[in-house]
Amino acid sequence: MMHVRRSPEEIAANRARYEEHQKKGLEFAPKVLPGPSPLPALAIDAATIVHQETIPGGWYWSTKLLRGEAIRIDQAEGNSTVALVAWNAADTSERINLVDTAKVQWTTALGKGRVIFSDMGRVMFSMIEDSSGAHDCLMGGSTAASNADKYPGEKTRNTRDNLVLVAGKLGLDRRDIPGILNLFAPVRLAEAGGFGWQKKLSNSGDYVELRAEMDMLVGFSNCPHPLDPDPAYQPKPIVVTRYKAAVPATDDLCRTATAEAVRGFENNALMQA
Amino acid sequence: MSDFIQTSPARTVENAAQDHFIPAEAPWSGIVRKGQTIRIEDSYGQQAIDTLFYRAGEFSERYSNQDTMRMQGAAYVGIGTKIMSNEGNVMLIMTADSCGRHDTSAGACSCESNTVRFGHGTKYLHACRDNFVLEVSKHGMGKRDIVPNINFFMNVPIKPNGEMTIVDGISAPGDYVELVAEMDVLCVISNCPQINNPCNGFDPTPIRVLIWDGED
Figure 1 (cartoon, rainbow over the protein chains, first blue to last red):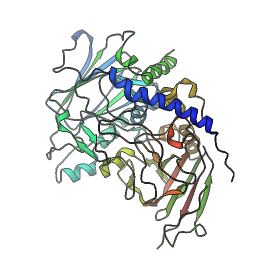
Figure 2: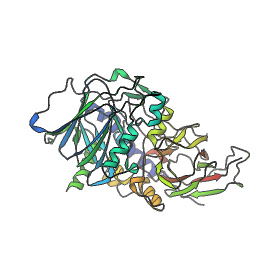
Figure 3: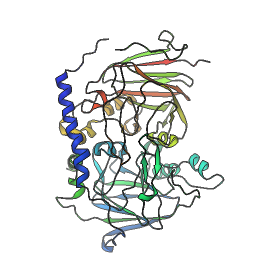
Figure 4: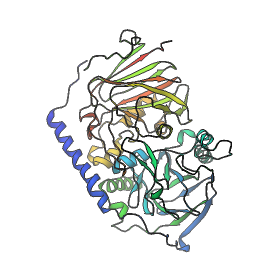
């Protein structure tokens, strides 16, 4: 069958445009990011707190989170990974999308100043504070099988089953479980593509604060990461504080740090108009 | 357009159970039975082929990029990669690969993400997400069933510091992957229409899919 190729001029013009975006994304954007938030975390103004939940090690929880609210996720007792998923409360077919989040920001390394996208080109969360910068959007969570391999003979809970429960109790099912973001999971890739656990990237007492940029349903699973080097199954509790965030200023970091975030928020504004 | 490259005496063009030409920018879907081998051929080179798999007859079990990466402890897809489902089952195994670099971290392009990446002016360009929605709709599925996919022949190196960028594909005309099915699967392909990044050399081209019955 015949196939008509594009002209060299059109190809060259599109390549030049891509390389300009790429240069901005890879070189300029990281320079404006502030680095990790200070430790220890400052206290949240009690008057703004909507709810505080302690999720026991191994367990799951979900909450409604309204636009303009935020959640702080605290490691109450030292390092532990928390898996996060989220859906648009008004249309749960719109959900957290880590592959788009990484691709459009030209990095898998999320930290303070970055945003987390849905599959619809809109911003779900702004990462307004983050003391670690050590999160994993690639490897997913534990399963019954991975726990059985890692902790033979032990009774454990796992992220896959937890998220089936989270989804089920929201009227969703396993078709609705998106790829997960592992918070506090210092996973890095070697050049050849192998995953490694960089324990030095984690600090005791690490915390993340995520501001909701749309009304959402947010799910958590508090289980050890598959690469967690601790051979014993001993997940620690984490504390999630839902609070009313300050109204973003016009020069808000997350809304202005990159051209991609600016365009994502333009898409949000259109949805919320 | 390239010539067929034979990988096994048992698999020729003549004895293929199915042989599909997939035009540039088009979707395709078909069933691959357990034991069958599917070849996905990048006929012109430098063409990203966005691919999803669902268990035939039980579509709620489907490809999972995170489980696939977790199980192999590595980010890139290559020979020996077990294509894993969200239920932790092996769907297919990659048995041949003449290219050497395939992605499963960067997902599919969409009109929506294109606006974020490349500007609102790129909204009305055909995209893989639209191919996927159209194709899975033929099987009773919708957008919620479209999960992060495999991008055969797409070159997305991730640096140790996390930096991730789509660079020029390294596939030559005729490069192929072959996967043997470990369960009956529905394969859904979007022959990527993206012209805003190098995943298709800024010039999407046709591809070919062949399926052979098992050798035993």
